[in-house]
Amino acid sequence: MIAPKSLFKRDAAINAADVPRRTFVRNALHGYEVKRDLNKAKFQDWQSARETASEIKFEGINHLDKYLAEFAKNAEARGTKVFFASTPTQAREYIINLAREKNVRSIIKSKTMTSEEIHLNDALEKEGFGVVESDLGEFIQQLRNEPPYHFVFPCMHLKRDEISQLFHDKIGSAQTDSPEELTMIARRFLREKYIQADMGISGANFIVAETGMISVTENEGNARLTTSLPKIHVALVGIEKILPKLEDLSLFLPMLGTAGAGQLMTGYNTMFGGPRQPGEIDGPEEFHVVLIDNHRTELLADAEQRDALHCIRCGACLNVCPVFKNIGGHTYGTTYAGPVGSVITPHLRGLQDWKHLSGASSLCGACTEACPVKIDLHHHLLQNRRNAAAEKPVWWEKSLWIGFAILMRQPTLYYWLTKTAPIAQFFHPLVKGSILDPMQAWTRTREFPMSATTTFKDYWKQKKKQGAR
Image (cartoon, rainbow, N blue to C red):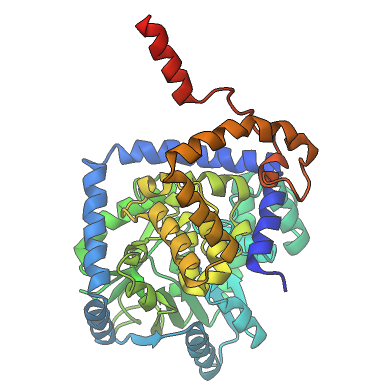
């Protein structure tokens, strides 16, 4: 089995070299940025909105025990069954056992990254349950047998002709270059799946403690069908999605639409408060909410990085990240790509195995500036690097940094070493590209700049002497 770091380096090299695909993705994200900025300007004060959103999430996360208990109490009062799962295994087993108990034959599923996190589809399919994704992007990725490329735009890396060929190969449709017709092909195929499904699985963008309701945001209406037509609705939700009050949605829904997709509001925003009540004509007979921890409480215990749990999965940090734009979402090899994924994945899946993600950043800070809830993303990446080094020091790295620290504290030594740089560079062509080349990582793809013939300090001294004359 190839280590995650080795896979990352291999796939990063392949995707960075795919210039047409990189250009396509970058152009798509540029269009998003234009729309996002137009709609950010329609807020009375975007920065104040970010501050308020951060404070609301701070309240919810720092009193998580209180608000989760409140949510469960209010949800169960309307007939919802709430299950707390500490691990992915517990969450999967609850859903599989429920499907067995209710003699479920087929399952329809709207977009939920939490299910990707726990590999729910694989588990259900191994037990003989047919699972179909109803979100158009997720449906396309399911047909390709690939995970989502981006957790808001699952198939943003694909062009129309590729999707048309996929539909032709997998479901026998005629080829077309029309986005509208491609959408209708998927809708016609999926309509029958909604009707056949015994269970509908969704995620939730937010869960509201005050009312015991979940909030689902989407652009296609597929989640409404997924949760309304089957007799059983299961919502799989990370415990960090909590909001204290219903009125908090008046800020978070437009903020999610703007930051996530450059929209004033997402097309469909639905609240689910329980199973079908007496006198109601539609809705599921049973409503189950599975609240999953999966190491989130361990992150909660880390006061330094706790605000990573504020994430509303808008994808804004991915959209502005220069690394994501060049290597793509699949390169990360994990459910959550981009800056926020690089922050939380080491917590969810192991610091030492996934520490390379925190190193795959220029620390430019664009992610932190874009985050609507003000998560200090680029500093958390730096903290992950520090924590990984402290947890399992690498002797030669430690030695290098000790040497660097000594050198930087000795100005005279530093000065004389800079004098030797031209000499070292003169001999560099003799070892360039070989294992003896100390700059091999750089010189493999580019020339190393020639060192200056004089230091700035010496140059400044000369200028001062010339001025004195």
